Length: 197
Image (tube, rainbow, N blue to C red; front, side, top):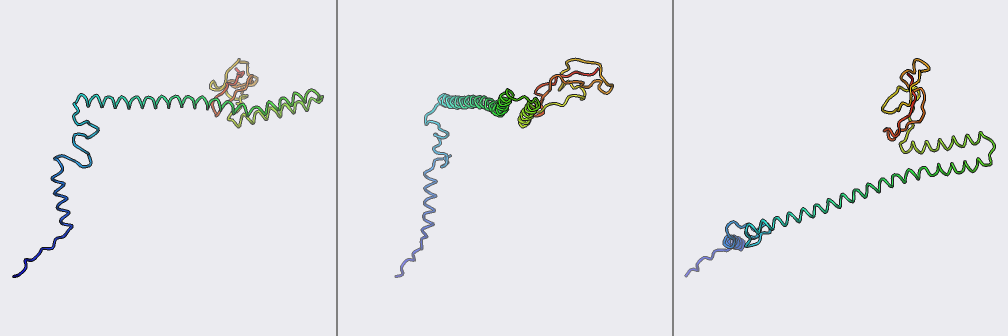
């Protein structure tokens, strides 16, 4: 009697069929394995009513709002503190820059007590003035050139008008009473001038 012929079973086919059958049977309709249980998506409680859901979402939004407000308030306070510190440190830098000029003035005053030569005193004061001017220019402060320039209300302040000594000085600066200065090309102090009429 002949033996019945055995069919060769491929183990991969078997596992593939059983796993797909199990998946189809075990998952309810509309279920996505990546999303969790259908009722508990997006943090929703299993037996949550619409009112409870609305209250929960309202509490979440309120919590987010308070956190964001606190974060913004901290940022605002930190910005104000940094701005004040920046202004204070900027002022201290300029003062440190001017302290050597003060030292030079003190030395000049002490030296002038015993010096009899007026030329040496004059030279000393000129050197101190030039030192001061260099330090200010390194910080962006520049003196305005005004004499002989056309009168300009954006940079000049007219003290008085006088008859112009020459016809070419009419409407121009004849004399400067107080020098004007610019800081980074913006007017720091207007020049007080006498204008030819």
